[in-house]
Amino acid sequence: MSVLMGEPAISGMLESLSRDQQHAAINKFIQGELAVERQKIDLLQQQGSHQSMGGPMDTRRPETLEIDISRHKGTDEDSLLRWFVELDDAIRARHIEGLKLHDPNVFESLGILKSRLKETFEPQRAEFKARSALLRLKKGKRDLQAYAQHLRYLASSVTENPVDEHTFINVFIYGLVDGSVKTYMFREDFHTQEKAIAYTEQEDFSLRQSQANSSNYRPTRRQETGGPEPMDPCYIESENSRSLSHKRMARYHRCQKIGHYAHECSVPSTATRPKTERDDHQWSRKGPRRGSNNVAKPRQQVGPPKNGQGQ
Image 1 (cartoon, rainbow, N blue to C red):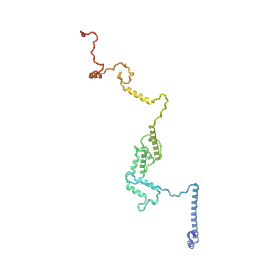
Image 2 (tube, rainbow, N blue to C red; image 1 turned 60 degrees about the vertical axis):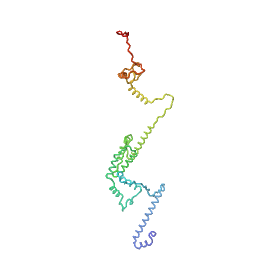
Image 3 (cartoon, rainbow, N blue to C red; image 1 turned 180 degrees about the vertical axis):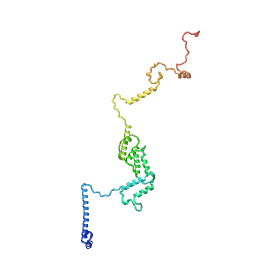
Image 4 (cartoon, one colour; image 1 turned 45 degrees about the horizontal axis):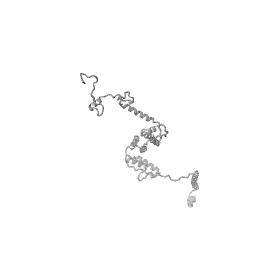
């Protein structure tokens, strides 16, 4: 006590205090010294246990992360509530707490500043509009990653009554384009939105790979063995269908009827084609062709002459 308090202080205490008060002061001083020594012993024991386990005692300050925050432009597309979410994330990343979040000369607290900014700059029914856009969002022709990112942006804009996981998953799956990926997603059960997005991206990638591989597929060439090469049955069927269609539409020179080939026709090949009215009309207009044998000849009378003709 004399080292800490000095001899004049101790002599004054002995002269002014009674005997019981002196004993109480000495006892209090001793108890305080014992408590300090116990704390030192506990700290040494903790350091020894950390060293024995091979892990050094970490007494460093937590590392801070500086995050850039986008400026709020005050437009309808730029949500003020979502900007507040970005601000809170940046504050937590930099471990800004306590008195650093308010200034008595500017604003009392960060919450009061947010409420005033919301009353002044937030458009009317902004959260309702963001929720409506989220519920009617469709993928359309956009990429799957862009569709998922736009859905996340709209969900983050709804801050007062956030969209739950099941609603987000239902909207995400329902907005996909009809196909095998959407059918597969309806068969599965997902509990988190990120898991649903990851599964959808995997299925979409597998579908694209299968389509690319099937379009570039080329069958291996057969080794030449010297024998007859087998014919593709599909080629036989296509040739048969082509020949049948040609057979149905063709008109042949023997009988001028359709539905059969010339070698199947029952009309003899030496038979002449029946004369039609069209042929008579062409003969009367043009006459016989040059060099043809179809020249009009005088009729020869057969039999004896009548009434002295031919004498």
